[in-house]
Each structure stands twice: as C-alpha cells, then as structure tokens.
Length: 144
Image 1 (spheres, rainbow, N blue to C red):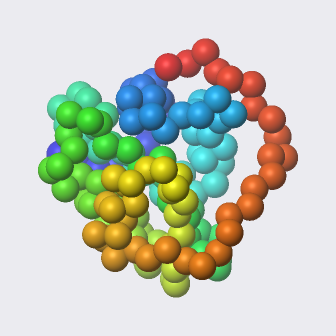
Image 2: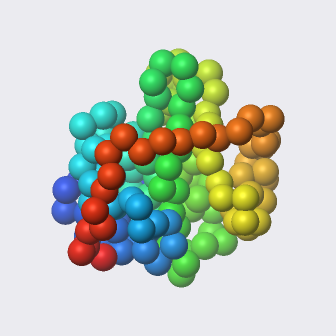
Image 3: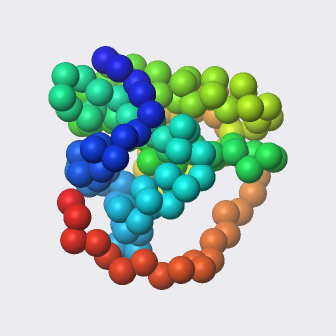
C-alpha cells in the first residue's frame, strides 16, 4: 500500500471512491472540488494506492490558524485494515511540520460509525456550531 500525493490521472478513480463511500452530495461537484484543491496546497491531497486501485483519499489544508480535513475515504473493501488511521496520521504529520496547532473536521451528526472512528483517534467534539454559506453554486457534474 502506497500513500502519495494526488495526480491528475487519479481523478476518475478518486471520484468513484467518493461515490462508493457516499461522500458526494448534490450541492458539491467533486471534479470542481478537486480542481479547487489543486490550486491550494495540492501536496496535502493524498491517495492510497494498492496495485492499480485507488483505495483511499484525504484532502487537507492549513490556513495559518487551523488545519482542516475533507474527503477522508477508504474503499469499503479495505475498511478495518487501519488505512483511515494511516491517512489521518500522514496528514497530521504533514500539518504539524507546517506548524499547524489544531486540526478540525466536520462529520454529519447522523454518521455514528465515523464519529466513533475519530473518537478512537483522540478527536473530541468542540462546543461550537458549524456555519456555512455558499459563495459559488456548483452545478452537478456528470462525472462518477
């Protein structure tokens, strides 16, 4: 298993992985999310490769105050093997090397399995509310 930075040739497989992991939502165009990420800290967008298959991904960033994680995905066929933990550890190391003092992430309140996963990694729920506002409306892509 290799963890390496995302390459353009990964796009279709990564989007398919995100669909398989039910990470894609109608209001987010995954191809546009990838294109946007590639303009900002692309070295913090990682994929896990086994053979020719893309079996994991993680997208992270650091704006100088906090780090963020998005699109942590592990193929259903590869869950329970520690890959999610390895991807998180790799991102944590890369962010710490940049001087990132804290890592934030968001999980849907209904996703009990993912909440348990992050708790096992030592993450705790902050006493904050998450707010959002779309600045650019994405039309759904036909990719996937």
